[in-house]
Amino acid sequence: MAFLQHFQETPFVISVALGVLPLFLYFFIKGFVSSQMGSLSKLPPPPEVPGLPLIGNLLQLKEKKPHKTFSKWAEIYGPIFSIRTGASTMIVLNSVDVVKEAMVTRYSSISTRKLSKALKILSFDKTMVAMSDYNDFHKMVKRHLITNLLGTTAQKRQRNLRDTMIENTLKRLHAHVKRSPLEAVNFREIFESELFSLSMKQALGRDVESIYVEELARTLSKEEIFKLLVHDPMEGAIEVDWRDFFPYLKWIPNKSLEMKIQRMDFHRKVVMKALMKEQKKQFAKGQGLNCYLHYLLSEAKTLTEEQISMLIWEVIIETSDTTLVTTEWAMYELAKDTKWQDHLCQHIQNICGSDNVTEEILLQLPHLGAVFHETLRRHSPVPIIPLRYAHEETQIGGYTIPAESEIAINIYACNLDKKRWEKPEEWLPERFLDKKYDPQDLYKTMAFGGGKRACAGALEAMTISCTAIGRFVLEFEWRLKDGEEENVQTVGLTNHRLHPLQVILKPRDR
Ligand code: HEM
Image (cartoon, rainbow, N blue to C red; front, side, top):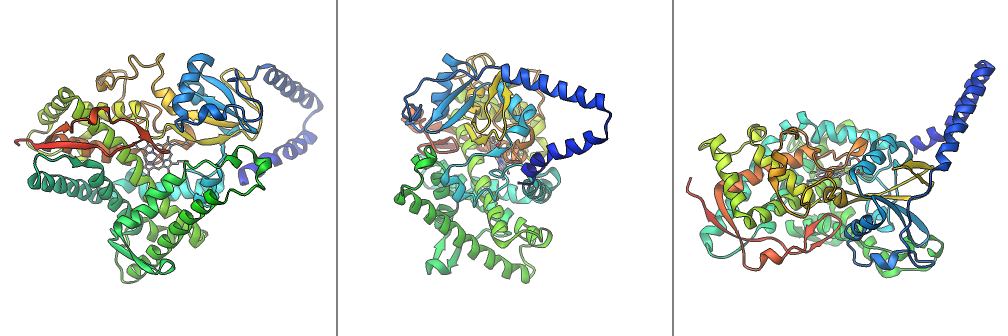
């Protein structure tokens, strides 16, 4: 908001300044500005995808995989085009060049978000770093998040938590193999629950096994906490309320959806309240102090209880979801491509000898990095970035973008662009072994976004995922359960496999 206010104040500041400048400077600036405005308005609008009167292109998007539909349209209409979603115009960006231009050069014109009704409720009206507009609140909470949790120094402090998480996952995989060596293991069930434990330790200072929630009058198990804090809201985030597309009809009730989302929001609120209450008691006894909640309570005095609850929840949901998506896809690809799996194992053994993969050694393992980046490219965990909004007219890719357009950034299309990637549909980690890629660069693909809003958790995601993949292939031979190869449908806001990965594991001789 402060950012918008600043913008609205600008003409006033300019007119005061002009009062004290010599007259010729005034005419020079005026002439310059109007010539710029003139050239801006001369640019054409982006090509339009034909749709129907009133509803526009909505029916063509009913498949719920807009990133794929947009990519097909990009082949016909080019990397930037416009569609109509009911009453709104949406500009869709599908290539690295136009996306970078939007994220960096034109960022100040599109720094606000356009959230669906569901996301507005679930994000407590943008009270999250990732969903916020670019304003003073965003800058402050992002600084807290980096300082305490996601920056390089903070990540070093959290090292033992990540190591424990990977050890626990391996113990559970070994236990399964010992119990039922020929039976496929549900990889997601184990890795997801260990990531969730890590997220709770980071955010709250403790891996909570159960919690009594007063408003629900019962004790919730860890699985139930996961469902209410992570699983349900991720599902709710993609709920589409048709009134989002026709704001002039918003007086018509859509009770069932509204109640579903309100219920999810209520559950999140009361579970977080109970967790925070319990943790405050622990803090008073001097326990669990090294966590984000304790940091926010002591350092961020201007934040309300509700805002702190949202920021803690944000860390839980972000840690639990996208890293799982990436690691699960990587293990699927390696289990399918056993040649690459053996090659990776051999490469790691050559460098590490009989030692394990540790975080310190990741930069010396380019083949492991290549698997990570190729998986991010081929299976972009965030295929479309939550919509941005052009609060003023701007231009992108040589076209005029009208004020009040919604902007969809299609990362999936950028990462599968035939003009940029050879055989883009194929999973080929060797492409990232090319010398032109800097091993330290986290942004080799568009998977983490870019510019001022690039992913704040990229370092953590890379560290966890690479160490885990390295340890997993050193410990076991991975093979897909029969039928798994065709099991590649996806679902959700983040590019989840529809069905959890099922693999047969055989311990390696070490
Ligand atoms: C492989 C895993 C991940 C992927 C692919 C990913 C992807 C992204 C993308 C594309 C954005 C940019 C959104 C935009 O431009 O508006 C983003 C933002 C963000 N991500 Fe991630 N993310 C991952 C893991 C994480 C983790 C583990 C965390 C934290 C624990 C995290 C925290 C954030 C935050 C706080 C933002 C917002 C940054 C801002 O708005 O300034 N991410 N992420």
